[in-house]
Length: 514
Ligand code: TEU
Image: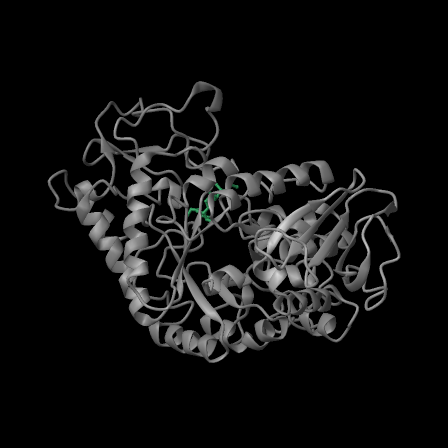
């Protein structure tokens, strides 16, 4: 049985505003992405997903969309998009766009119509409730503001629901007209040829019609991290049927921001919901072997064992980069062995291959209402003062040390983290065991996690297996594994027999001795 492309693929997330400008300027755009596809080719990734580039007032940097079927002029136009898509396909890189079904911008014509009058045909496209202006309908808290998820609309005298900013009203997916319109959006991009969607907060779209209070002990946690209702699963099945009706194994990769792998797993359904789901508990796990051992076991138990395919992600545009969270380049280098060595589809975040740290954002340059500017700093491409952007200052400050830590400088240095990513990606591509095989834990000292990737999906050992070992502890550790080092996190000892000891915060990939 052949497996779909997205199981063996390595995904790469591009945040378009911060990736590269097509012509000199402080913000990136679609033409800039196309100009830098060589970088993705050099690295060896298989697929890219792009954060929103649609028309938007940018209250949430593109996640507040006023037209789902166009390109914001600051990023290009539909012609630029088509060119980018063709250029990706010419290089055998799949392209996923970000589908944001939970909410629109308050400037979207649908919401403008909805809020114009209680009788407007679009009124019921959003979620409105009666009440008095001083008591919201329930205790749900919005993300970013940590205030009520309800805003009172003076003109029409009702509350509307928004799990994010007041400028991001939630759509009412209980209304079949909304389902039809949003399916139309999916068809629009699928017909243009995209290979699938990353779906924003997909667990948020269905609502319990009773809109019950969140439990008091969870009050204060944004409702967007708690919303988990049966209605959503039916809606996702609808999206899945739509996508599966297209040829070419199009994929839906859902963002399920529920901080329990057990709950995330539910969104794969019985093979009839998401093809892939982000699983954030590992992203939020500190650099400690016992904690990671538990996360890996829980992913296996909840996701692999139900016949679903996991994903692994350590950084994205919403969280401090893992280089920053883990604190050292040694750890960032060893962490690549988690991403590319565990069983499942890795999702990289542009710039992690350069070992970028979050930018330090002085108070006067803060722009994101969610405090996420640091991880969205622009990518430094060259050592020059403009770092390849044609302007000395981009929309956010550069990440630390851009004169040394930029793509041109690191690609010229074979010992750099960028080359480590490339070598490990190549080793993965050359190994069916790493791409699609089974995974069996190996007993190792407390601070070490080690596992065997078996060419046999059921986990039977064989000659084409691979072994990964990572020492997350502060002391050198003896590891009971034997074989040839294919890739080492510090580049030493490659192509030689493993010496038996792993330095602190170091990792190796081995071809085991027969
Ligand atoms: O994120 C959803 C989400 O739940 C996170 O924003 C989370 O609440 C936050 O990172 C906690 O710090 C998605 C997008 O990835 C994000 O960029 C958007 O702002 C959000 O949805 C709204 O569309």
